[in-house]
Length: 158
Image (cartoon, rainbow, N blue to C red; front, side):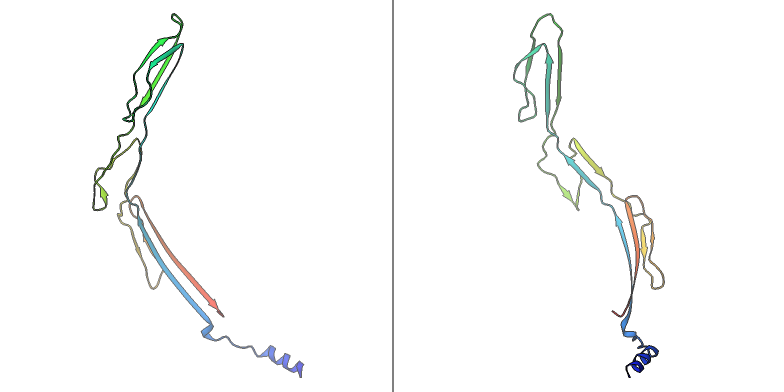
């Protein structure tokens, strides 16, 4: 009896029902236009003073306003060679307010260390979705990107 049951199960397969098969198609298009941006970092003042066979009298260094003090050099050993080097870099003025209108700053403050990024131009940037074909994208101007994607998922016996 057991052998008969085993043989009969080999000839009769159990059909899968249509409810156990699913198919999903997802289409998407993403269009991006880069916005304008400015990153600006204020630089501080620097002052350096160095030399050989020379000495400095008076104050030297930076004040709170970014000005450096007065120094008076004099030779250590008169009649001998000397070297003298002085360098000064003024600090950026501190900006305490800026006005913005419609989400933009009309006159942005550019400090000594600034990076400016121009905004993109949409130009002919476009994307379309269709019932019958994959998404299509059309290139735009500078500073734009377009991505079209189709995902197909087929599940059996889920």
